Image 1: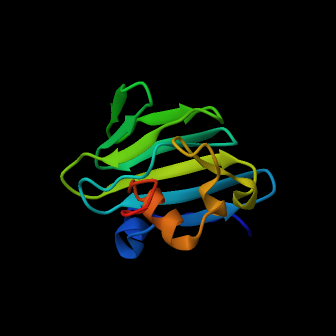
Image 2: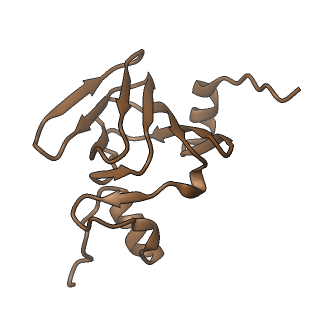
Length: 141
């Protein structure tokens, strides 16, 4: 049997990181964990449609125009490929999301808003800094 049933809250609290749960040619799904209040990623978009479902905590989704949407458990964001956003843990504990996206994870681009290019093509140090909401250019650059 290939059907899996899992407790995402337990898994998220044990692993404390993003982890792909299912990855096929047509679809992939993951648990997204921002363990500390203030944790965030960069303003970015992807080349595929996706959704984020809030399981625990509070997620503020920021947009390039300065707008924001606050999501609490039970809420979902439906995002078209090419729409820019930034996720931030604005709660007082861990933020746990379930993400789903069309296509396999290997085909997904992570396009940074400022650079307008896929950060997967950058050196690892830059990719990690930018992916955690850090400055696009290293200090002293």
